[in-house]
Image (cartoon, rainbow, N blue to C red; front, side):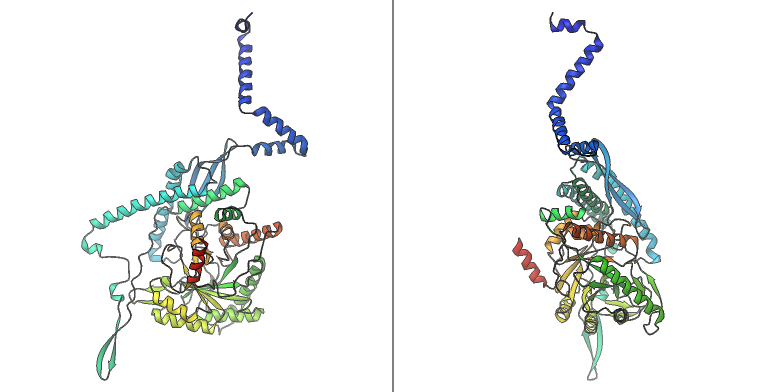
Length: 571
């Protein structure tokens, strides 16, 4: 009897079962399942683990297809100051199931300096930014990144940057059309220093005759960098993808970023020296003085992060004791500011430095040896364009040249100050160079390049501050750090995510020498300090922590020209 004849007499149910077995056998054969099972069982017998099922689960998990991005989710959250922000979440298909892999949020440009008169407008602007970011993440970016390998960071960031540039050009065309449709009188209204402030004249008497002396023109302000609504979506998604890739590989984020930067994971790591904000006498502080947005402690290199924090906390306690008991210090009020530091009411820049000097003496700390100071002047925020001067204290105005003399006097009186951050606007090029010539051997000038990373270098500047905000991708951070080799420290922004500690991982992974995390209060800052401590302990336990030999103060001792030459020689 033929096979067909035999099968025709078999009941249909048995025939279907036979066909299924045949199909299954063929499926297993084609996919090599018997061989896989055999190898798994051989490995299982060889190792004889206590948890048989756990061993088999891990064995087959390693054979799974690489995870792919299945979708993105953008959600509105609140930052540490209770303001609306955007968070990006990445989902991947892992072992045939969709899983939430990681989420991230980056800082925004909205600072704490808004007055009550503009608060409502700024608040609505922030809502518009966040809503646009959520729409981007849940819509076009979700579609573009679906199916992408999260470990291909450069490809992901390229897609994100191209999308942002397309939106930026669209917005630019819209603004151009609006400007062309305006009347000539409306088109003349620009947000720069008034022309009347650009050249000032003063009269003097010479031998009974009146003569006119023309002061050096006050350069008009550069137009502010446009911030495209929704831009925070780009940085948030890029960071979330990087965290996802690190999780997939089973390594910390700092090791993943280090491998991206160097082409492979380095054999050793060092911990950036944390710069801690001690005092704030800026625009949001009580008192008349507004020049010193931050007075920052620079600890001696070679100490553990825990030691630095303990020392700083003790110093702050002594400062508080002095403020509360002393009348000669001139302080009338103290409070915690947005940077997490103590904000004290002072009138002159010498007063906060005198307070720190006295506290160090009482605490047995050698100011100028064990610790040094940096001053974040944030001068661009203090310009009175109508007068062509800087308002260093309430109703106290100084020209750029007068500010040079003021800084020189401070550095001479307080040699422990080894760095000035943003002492002028970028436009005051002559004053940057003049001040550098005067104090450059003992004090470094630093510039915030968060919004101006592509701008020409300022004369005399030896270091740069960089914040991770808006459309800055992880690949962008690596590129900027490489371009400014050895002269960048990363810092926190005013509007920090509550629980994201990624900045510490980024600073370690990029191999930075310094990181500025703000004052020692507030969950958004202490989370980052605690993460830095954990990384340091983990590296020490693994035996790959090295104490990077730092230059003695001032920060970033190499001159800009020397840094450029070094960068060119490495290309």
